[in-house]
Image (cartoon, rainbow, N blue to C red):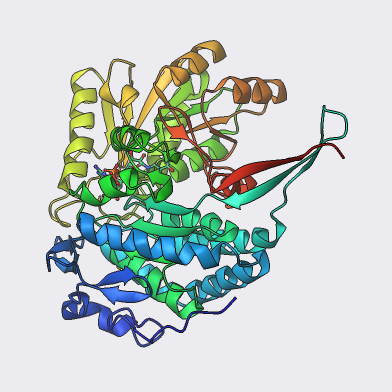
Length: 508
Ligand code: NAD
């Protein structure tokens, strides 16, 4: 296996390492208008660009190429050509490449975190946490790459021998959201490269620069030309996604984002019957039983509900509290939330940043007003914070929630916690499951029998028991129902990028 002889083409802005951080304040460095295809920094053929803005201030960060159908086809062709050689590399070779990329992400963690805070808004400490989480997917899958085994199977036909070979599925189209600009990408690219696939990754329109910085590090890690292609397009364009889901060369699509877009992409994939993973929206129930450790449950609910200002797909969306501890829980929870410091993620001591854009703020406000009109009490917050910037909303706690309120059935995706009272375990599980989606679910209880019972009855892909944080590269991540299908992370994540080929030898 030859490492391709790449010209040293370094995106001028994306020259990371210690020299970069001071330059981040200079917006002119973010107007190179290139993305990464076939080992080179390229512009859109049309010359068109789109803007990315800082959600905390609304200010322009920079511009990126607006890729169209033809540009995307070029990237797919590069990935197809690279696949021929890359699929033949050994697991050990691919492992070393991923490990090198991991090392570079860790070495450049501070600069990557700066980019994440700037374009996504999350506070620096959270951004650093995301970089670690993102890097861990490369590390975990680098360790798996040399351990990809098939099976030998005893045949039911006398004299026959059966075995299976695990092969890379081929060129993969990856589409990711803005809420984890680094981790949603590494969670897909890690397993794809581990098994020998090549990828074309469409970055979110809101957060293109963190993925481009990852591309720069891939280049430095010596990932061969065409194996990783990172293309940019604005949030509102469907063109790149349409090509990725209809071009017959692409054999697998992995999408993380909203349920509506996931359904659209699934329809588009049907024409060429691609292997498909959909990691879609959730509406996570968070149940606190009377027998729970209330302080632990409060800490878990705060972590689960308000991480990234409520903008994660596994954030608690409906908090159900049993009536015996409802008042105690509500008081302690509101007290904990009142200590948050909302502001620009770069400011020291800020614990919670802005929402991503005005649409998100409007949705959060609409959910609060709807709950209020239907009888909920606003215990804390409840309003926009225009004095901080265009996209800030007060961390909000509502009590007296009922199931006819919008927050019961829709993902709020913001810093608003509604507390629903309930009486019995059977009632809590029934209401928790009364939604068409099922990504994460949480509950707090010290009753071992109940722990088993409720974990088995929740209609979700992931359950947190006595914890509000469940993400782990070693654990399978994914949903059921309209939260999608497929798993990321863990050994299950590897299988999403493979085909199992069966070989039968007869008459032996
Ligand atoms: P979104 O579906 O609008 O966008 C996600 C990605 O899809 C972006 O890159 C976007 O540009 C792209 N996209 C949008 N329309 C497209 C189209 N027609 N063709 C191709 N690509 C298109 O979602 P969002 O608002 O950016 O992200 C928030 C949603 O993502 C929430 O619902 C959240 O629950 C979900 N999410 C799920 C997971 C998970 O693992 N299940 C993780 C994070 C976020």
